[in-house]
Amino acid sequence: MKTKTLLSIMLTIISLVLIGCAGRNIPIETAQPQPEGILLQNPSWYDDLYFDDLRSFSSYYESIDREYAERMADQEALTLLTQYLNGQAESLRGSANLMVSNNPRIEVHRQTAFESSIDVFSSASIRGAVITRRETYELPSGLFRAYVQRAFDEDNFYERIEQESSENDNPFSETANQFLQRARETRRQYKLQHQVP
Image 1 (cartoon, one colour):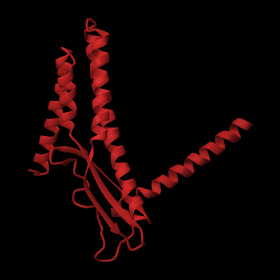
Image 2: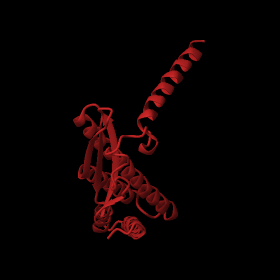
Image 3: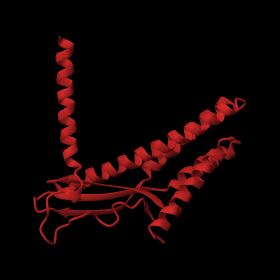
Image 4: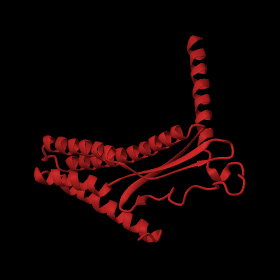
């Protein structure tokens, strides 16, 4: 009986949290119509995946306090960037594991060194991420909507892993190079598709 009651309470709390979180992320296009002269859509740069050659991530946040809205938008953009980098790091580790399973003669310490460099350079990329764009608007409701874009040098992330691996004669340097080439091709295709110089 206690287990069912506890489970019921936990599900209710989780549901309330999810409902509360979902309300904040309503796309602007579906929000209530706003008076003329007020921002009706995201800034033109909001959906850009690149700022120059840097991989970028954008977010917005609304609050009655302007500074808080800006700080939280920045935090959310940094969180998106971190999630992306963590995904890339996991993909690199997966490729290394596949390489080891296909070639058991690769020494364990080489894979460990490769994974260590992934951790070091992904942390460095997160710390080195820069704010590339920021805009804040006051809405008719009195709230402030802050937009922030953060970016990092994705090429540099892969290049540093590749360089450290090749300096240590690590067979995984080729894996990092493949990821680097893929990132460059993805950026090239994006710029062609969106007619970005």
